Amino acid sequence: MFGGWYTKGIPPGLLQVIPNDGNVFDDGGWDGYPTTRNMLLDSITAWHLDNCVFISGDAHMSFAMDLCKNPQNPLLYDPETGKGSLGVEFLPASISRGNFDEQGVPESIANLFISINKKANPHHYLNDFTRHGYGMLTFTEDSLVAQIFYCKKETLDYAKVS
Image 1 (cartoon, rainbow, N blue to C red):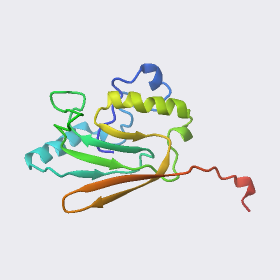
Image 2 (cartoon, rainbow, N blue to C red):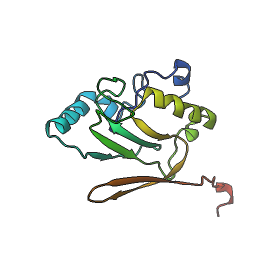
Image 3 (tube, one colour):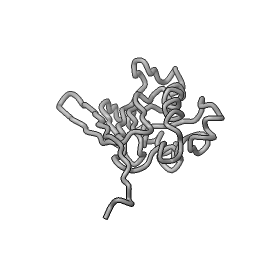
Image 4 (cartoon, rainbow, N blue to C red):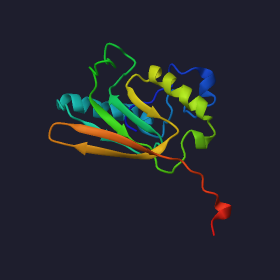
């Protein structure tokens, strides 16, 4: 995931239940390389690009977000209008790979976390941490439509498989 996923503003008690890496949720991705990410965002600005779309995967959760250098700074980014956004990112869920519920986070906590996460990460327009599915992008000359389709989650009983 290219866009940031920050822990600032998340209650400390919740951070004891939700896996995280300190100031960010996953420093193994771009969040672990903020200087390089900012260089790329600065290049988007310098080149006057106004239609950047990042397509990501392997987070096992769903995200759709604006891309900005500091989403918590209202002088640099307005989540209501998108002013300050340098692009968008689309990251659909995994079909079968585990996410919060498979990591032992109760679904009620995961659902509560979605609303809390939106306040801490105002650039996130969509988060889903428990459902599985896939994404589709439709590009036309003047638009982009991003869709996520969720599948019914079923448990396979391996004892009955022959």
